Every structure is written in C-alpha cells, then in structure tokens.
Image (cartoon, rainbow, N blue to C red; front, side, top):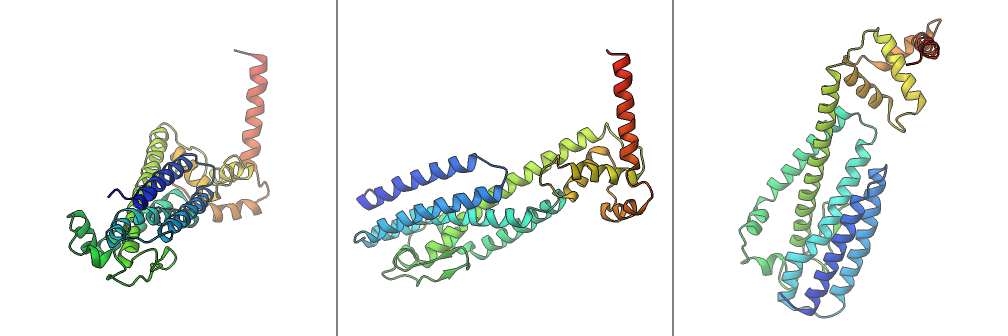
Amino acid sequence: METAIVKKIEILLEEMNQDVDSMAEKESESRVRDAATVITKLMEYIKRLDDIILSGSISVHEEIFIFKNLRPLFDGRLVQFQRILEFEQASIYLDLVSRKDLIQKTLRSLEQYFQENLELISYLEMGHSYLDSFYFSNSGGMEPAMIDDVYLFCDKRLNTAMSCKLAIIKGYNWFSSYLHTVGEEGEQYFKSLGNRGKKLKWVFSKNDFVEYVYLIYSSGAFGNASIRDVADVLAEASGIKMPNPYRIFQAIRIRRNRTQFTDRATGNLIKLMDETDENPR
C-alpha cells in the first residue's frame, strides 16, 4: 500500500531497524545495560510512530495495513528487548550450567505461548485476510486491552488487541532466536573447554584446587565473575569434578596454614625464576 502515511511509517521503521541493529552490534561489558539502552531508543521511535498515526485521519484500509503489517514490527522489537533485559537480569549471577537451564526453561515457555496462539499464527502464515477488519481495525474490531502486563499497553487510538498480540508473537520469536544464539555461544565455550581439558588433569588435592580457585577469584582477574563461575570454568579446564567450594573454603579458613597451596606455588615460581636467571635459554 503506497499512501503518504504508510510511506512515512515505512521510512521510520527502516530508520529504527538500522539504528537498533547498529546499537545491538556494539556490545559493551553489560548486556543488561545494552538492552536497557536499546529499549530507551525504541520508546523514542514508538512515540514518533504514535505521533504519525494521530497526525491525521486514517482510512479503514490504511488502519488494517498499519496494524497488521507495520505497527507490530515496532512493538515487537520493544517486546524482544524487554524480554532480553529480563533474561539477562535473571542470569547475571548464574553459572554456565544454570544459565543453560534458564535458557531451556524460557524457550519452553515461549513455545507454550506460540501453541496457545496457534490460531492467529496460522491465520497469518496462510496469508488469510477475511478476518482483517475484525482483527486489525478499531472501527469494527476487537477492543484493545492490557496484553501480557509489562510488555504492551494497547491504546485504542493507536492499536488493536490482535495487533498487540501479533507484536508479542514477533517479539517472542526474535527473543527465541536470541536465546538460541546465546545457547550456542555457551555450547561452543563448553566444547572448547572440554577439548583443552582433555590435555590437563589436576593432580593435587581438592583442597588445593579450591584454594587455587579462591586465589584467582580474589585477584579480580575475571572482573565481576562470581566465585561459582570461576570455579566451574577452572574445574572444566582442569579436568576435575567440582567439589563444593564454599564448604571446603570454610575448612581452609580454620587450618593453621590457610595458604599452603599458594605459598608452595609461590615458592616454586620463585625457584623457577632463580633457576632461569642462572641458566637462561
């Protein structure tokens, strides 16, 4: 459909997608902050979309086209990044295994939502239009309502209930792709650790290993990583079944020499340096 208002919205949509995609590619150290920044930018674009829709009269045909084909692409991106923000906030302190479990649990909930809305999804995928005036027009369609609480509020002047639901479906679909990508990153990381770990095997005691873990953790070498994350990664790389680091650490704290592994390792390192000074290669 080539009308002035549709053209304006299509240009705005292209601008939004380019802007958001560019922002999403520039990852910082915090995915939570990245998602929040994108959400703020999306709200600005959606406000501009609302202003266009309210700027003049829209025919029924334009209304159906906008609410079926264009509006959900704006609101869907908002849903996508709201769910990304929610996921990253929930997983920020999780270890790799727990994060993987959360991904699987979230994917199952998304699949359930798709199943619950299979009628609308099938209607759209089959290219039907016989219910468009009911689904995507406020002149004779469904009354808009609050959809999925925090994600979208459907204003009757700017949306329809089915347009909101379609936006959620699109947003969940994009979010699902994000989860699969994140999951694949985790699998590749585990695989790389496993490949390297085949060549290494920890030969000292588990108490020494836990002291080593806390040494690395307390040094801040891995930034804000939790003790559980550090322990899991080092255990995987060292070919050791991870003991309970908290319980063993308590035992280490009360023994006479609390840093016996660290002292021994430091002594061996100094000895190696001295020997290298005497016999440089």
